[in-house]
Image (cartoon, rainbow, N blue to C red; front, side, top):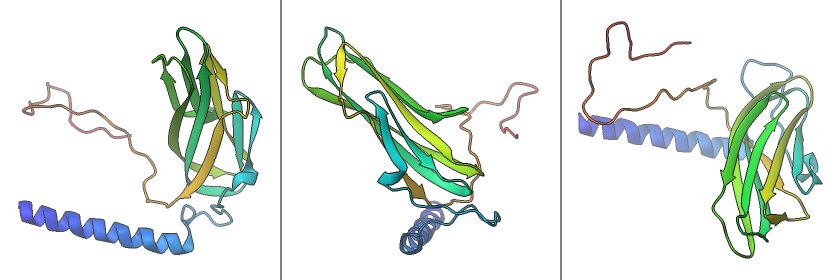
Length: 181
């Protein structure tokens, strides 16, 4: 059984690699079954810095597909307990948030965060990064944000339920091991 699993896993990996190579040549496809929508590449012209604490990108109207959003903010320590915080989101959603309270004594430090978003929008969609610091000076050029297309994997949503180490135990009466939405 271990050999069969290893062979099946290797076959899945080769198939995934072949799909990735094909998509690299043609670009990702928009979510299938939604005519009139596209998944455009978003270059530097789609993004700009608003101020030393915020930057944003605009995804155009009639877009469907998956995107990777990467954001980073940089500050230089100037106090006893410098800290940083960063978030990626937009109207009605937050897809990543991080805080680093580990003090550093000198020089610049960058806090980076990334997330994926699946988009289906009829109107332009702003994706923003908000960056804050304490006892530090922000880079006057502001935070950085970039968005790149990802291939459609055919999965609409996943939800982590949790994990349990050790020997599995029977579920208490009335409790199941699966969750459906």
